[in-house]
Image (cartoon, rainbow, N blue to C red):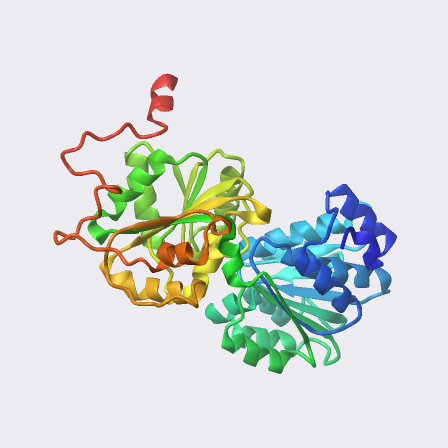
Length: 426
């Protein structure tokens, strides 16, 4: 589809799309928007960074604008994703549109949100917990919410929001249009769709494997005791923004503290931070004031930083599908990026599950061996692809990483980046 005009959207929405630079629908948008406009329930799957937010926001806004009092509820698993969605919605509405959008998330003052709700917004975006808080307070009414969007549904279930979603639905009309979107659809999502959706259309654009085509991959076998040393080396040799995923909140704080000691400025993003602090960190990262961000999986969904070049998996995710979301923070909207995985002996089974997910046709057997790297998937044939994820490394008997990736203790340490800048300021 060449442009949005062919979708039959209202004039005000076409004007907003033009102003914000949305010229041509992405594949997921081209397929989803006509179905949503026709009133069908939808189960939509597309790789992260392919325009899922626009795929549901554009048609829902068109329907809201065309109605007198209908409302929409968009539920997301994380605060960061909710904020990104509300920003897109407000851009699409435009400054002169009388329809308001409200964002209801934890970590923010209830009073601020009560003021937003008094303005009778017709598009509500929020996280399950805070939405339920307002429903119990009776500060939010969903009686006219005839459109429901569950974004990143698999993540909401992983985070234990299933019961809270059920509670929210009790306050909504039985007759409604429900849309479920995610980058992956495990079996439990298919089961859930039968509970929430009525005779849905199912569309899938860009299966998980195609997400990898613009990402250069490298897996490095290393003992846990050598992970930090390896991280420093990787950060020193890479240009551009770097997102580092660690397993626990404590790990993110510890890594960032050690990096600061070594002269490397790094921000932290985890669930223990106040929302104002999280917003400040993300603003600094987006504006290139912080080159390195150490985060838990809270950053694996909805984090959109266009200039992000590298994703380092300091710890592998416990769920294979989360790997897709993590590396999807780079190579967004057709750009290129790099993904690096540190694999300790205890994480071999986790990598095997990831390998099965991203390389379903290859033979899978994890035995520690040499480190591998792979270029752009577009440039590799199937044999090279197997080598990239299937070649199983040989671990040294002393348990250290290969010489290629971790310098020996006798080696003279390199200057930490930012150190020179600090010195010059003095």
